[in-house]
Length: 428
Image (cartoon, rainbow, N blue to C red; front, side):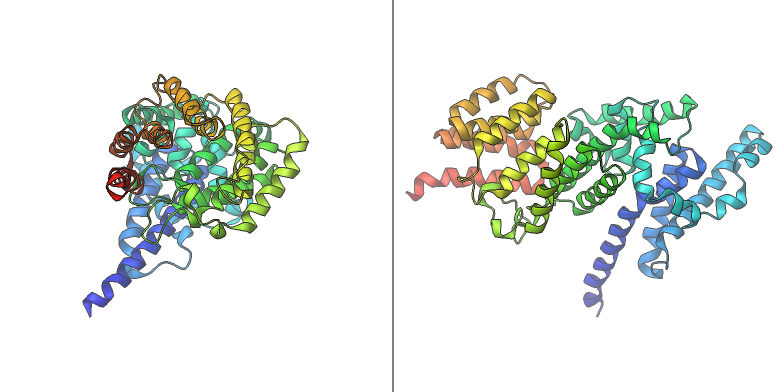
């Protein structure tokens, strides 16, 4: 009997874990809005999540889990305020700023309704004027995306210790700035929009292709990013880059079901069953892009969406309009100093002009310190060497890339590719 209950228990815990991941940024946004203290609010919410993870599997999920988490976090904040008050002997000041009865009443009240979606609000709050854009993005990835410091460091192509210091300094800077950590005024929100778009892009990217772990995709992250991008587009429908980002997410996420096999193994684009691509999402993304492109200056998200659309509308890799993709990457590189864009451009160049042209571009990219140790540089080089007929070089490249990636599905795919090439001469 106990054996029969174990899978049920694991499934229940997995559902609760997924719910807590989804609720965490919403709860954090609500608590920060009231208490105006990022670091203390983050600690309080983490404590509330730990309590929920321990109690809910046995005691059941509350009727309103979001309100439950907010109340528990609020109580922790009350304790924190009281402790700080006692330590500093400034009870009157703290009580006047944060009445305890107001703290304990936190829940899905009028306040939350007026604020709208707390996760989206938290995005704008984290893009604080006291922070540089890269620092604000890192802080938001932690608070809203729930990414670990290591995952954020990989997204920025910097060491983990560097990113940990950056996030810690961000919290300190906000506290020292004197600028309230609260919902920005409309003109402030407009200035922060670029950083908010970048954050959503990075959260989606980490969800679509997880940088570490046993799963290729984290649909909790990509789904939340897509939901927030849709909400953001609804708030600023005239902004072409917000529309471009939503189109990019739709066109990319449309391929999700075809990217993994029955056991979660990676299936590359050229081997995917395109009948499994979600045509409704492709149609929505293309329509959004067609409505957006004629309206003004074209930005990087619109260009990336256009590239995704060319891929999605092709019946096969061979039928893909690679010259158009290469031209779009050329435009994108002029706008963005992103080595991953240049890496994808090298693949497009190889598809148009042959593998030697792509390899020549990779030789230049290998001088970029942001890419020199990155597994994708080795993986792309191996792929192009394989196309050029250099089997030994390709095998070495795939193995080197496998040793450098922290994604288990990617590692398995790369090692399998190397093994397949090594066995090929014996099969002929």
